[in-house]
Image (cartoon, rainbow, N blue to C red):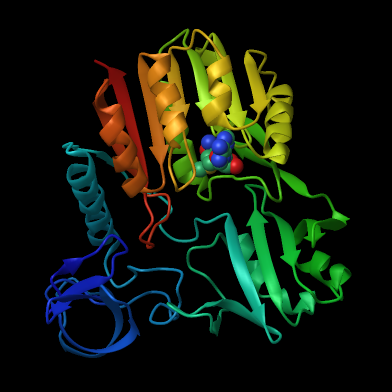
Length: 395
Ligand SMILES: C[S@@+](CC[C@H](N)C(=O)[O-])C[C@H]1O[C@@H](n2cnc3c(N)ncnc32)[C@H](O)[C@@H]1O
């Protein structure tokens, strides 16, 4: 019997006291399983037979769901899946930080066909994703999470003429396609053929531009953002827009803001109109170049972007009253937390794609800060991933 879903949205059961994580199994279901991976403290299993199915179980709209490692909960309705994700975040913050939150749930208006970036594998001339829990390929001709221009590109992957490699496909609001290919193969791409089929703006092949540009422009909330092939950019333009709205509501008029881990500058630039000054710090050189360019083309003059480790470099900036921090999955470094506390700012807006490190960091920040508001944004629909935003105010 499946007891509950874990943080990765796999079914949880116990056999002889050992925890078993079962793919594609829902709470209350009785299933027969086959153990596919055995570790000291836990095992991973797949279902071989459903004896009793959950009334919440639905038939996945995606034909690849049973095998593909991309989605985790296309076996539930959108709302049921999202509620499980919300409950998980609440529980993780309670368990690891001892804090009760009642987050506002921001749904994805574009539940399918929302991702602007997809990473494809090529193995022995075939293109697709990895099967769940494996490095075996499942051939895919359409991904229900990816935006339509990416799906159009997927139909023409054979034009790449690869044997083996990794292909990152990005698209923007203008339906343009930017390809980044990493492979040991000689380049035999049929570029002319591909150009006739998709709005191709650039191909980067093992770090070299072989066609067009290594960037494109994205338009969100009436601002233009340059996005290089290897800069971080939020994968869901609809939720990114909502993130901007929350920031605009939350940041006080006339604030002096530090945007830590700023990527190509989107968050800081989205609120610059309201602020006296915004400083952005980012460790990836290309991203900071893009951020400076983005300030210029949007005529934003009160921002300054700095290249370096945000958690140390922040020490050099004085008189801040608000910190926006959007770190990678491993959260804020110990030094970063120490430096943030030293700043004694009035407000911290912490955006996180990993509730476990968010909870770990909140457990320290709570000594000097209270949670004023919290949000859960469904940036990565139908996967176990979730974006959270917490507004902290100094006690
Ligand atoms: C989750 S992304 C957020 C980017 C940006 N805020 C946005 O919304 O597009 C995290 C960013 O942190 C950057 N990063 C990672 N470690 C960093 C560090 N120590 N100092 C500064 N930036 C860092 C990454 O390169 C990436 O751009």
